[in-house]
Amino acid sequence: MANQFVSQIADIETDFPQWYTDVVVKTKLVDYGPVKGTMVIRPYGYAIWENIQRELDSRFKQAGVENAYFPLLIPMSFMTKEAEHVEGFAPEVAVVTHAGGAKLEEPLVVRPTSETIIGHMMGKWVESWRDLPLRMNQWCNVMRWEKTTRPFLRTSEFLWQEGHSVYATEEEAEQETLNMLHLYEEFAKTVLCMPVLTGRKTEKEKFAGAVATYGMEAMMHDGKSLQSGTTHYMGQNFAKAFGVQFTGKDGVLQHGYTMSYGVSTRLIGALIMTHGDQRGLILPPPVAPVQVVIVPIAAKKEGVLDACHALRERLQKAGLRVKLDDSENSPGWKFNEWEMKGVPVRVELGPRDIENGKMTVFRRDTCEKSELELASAGEELCALLGEISENLYQKAKKRMHERIVNAETLDELLKGVDGGNFVRAGWCGCRECEDRVKEFAQATARVMDGENTAAKCVACGKPSVHTVFFARAY
Image 1 (cartoon, rainbow, N blue to C red):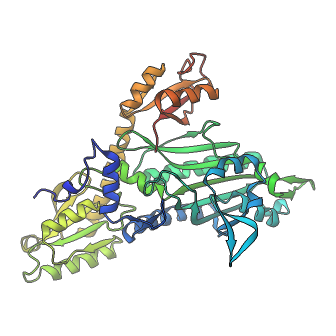
Image 2: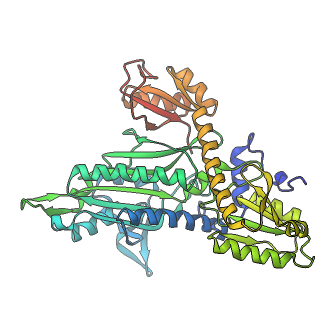
Image 3: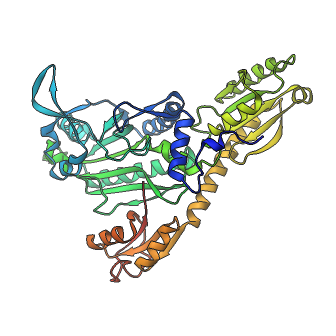
């Protein structure tokens, strides 16, 4: 039976932006909020975020990071204490000027990020080297007043986690910045099944107020890049601005070194655009709200629903997230519905399957069917979900590596990004050449490669100082 929902979704190859919008709305991940640029995350979409949150939170705690919560409203004076920070965020800041029917003595900023207020509190809490390191994370919402928005990818309000740490030494803070980058990279691979490029950002692309920013870039289906996570080494910039000082072992009062890191609900957009196809979503098993959906065949025949309920209980005991679709809709309708929603595995169970001790299994990643033993359903489906995760990762990895090309001239760079590729090219390190690439090819420097393998700058032809991955980006 042809998928009846395909006609409701734009063609993924010819109109990828509309395909994305169709998928996130029709699968009931989000709806549009009443305030321009906001989104309502519906239960199915929020369940994905909860799974992302759970997986990341456990990794943070294993690393020794503790959760805390800081206020949504930040005094305007805090934002102005770090000059580069306030300049960088000024166009996106939402400000509260009135409350309780009266004008406030000092305007309050709706947090775009929390470096300032957390720096203020760290200044109160840190007194001695014994108080260090202080490592905290918070799960919260932030607001950045965006002009052009798209669900999950760029909205005025979004959910994220932001980690903030202060250390006694520069070396410790820099190492933590890299450690968290590697934690994100491992998470992207094993949980989101998503390959990424990681590296340092250019000065132009770094976080406002940071000494250095490191990014995690993922290739989407259309060859554009999506920044999927960042870590920032702040040096002593915020420590000096907010008086984060401690008495060292030598008895000398000194400033701490801070760093921060964050990922957001943008990750949901990333996995949609990395794995999805013309049928809709393909969700990686670790974050799928429903990992296995059971569809009864000839449900009204004696014993079928009982067998389906028994199978669901067994799979739940095996630790799987299972849905039994015993609604009045036809099996064909259910097949289409759950395929569009990206459920990794569909189990079809009817009288013949039960009689033969088998179950018919459909894999969303390959759209292939097979038969598995009903008696060992839990073990076999757990193994199958692992195979699906690995297949999704390898498929995305192969696509990314096949679409990384080299360029020595601006014309070659333009041809590369026009073809939906990441372009590896040399850069002399000057801002003018970086701006020239953007003007000429509408591409930006995503991250710098670990080694400088290019001989000359793609823009000016002078000796290369860095090798950079350029791409068009969301």
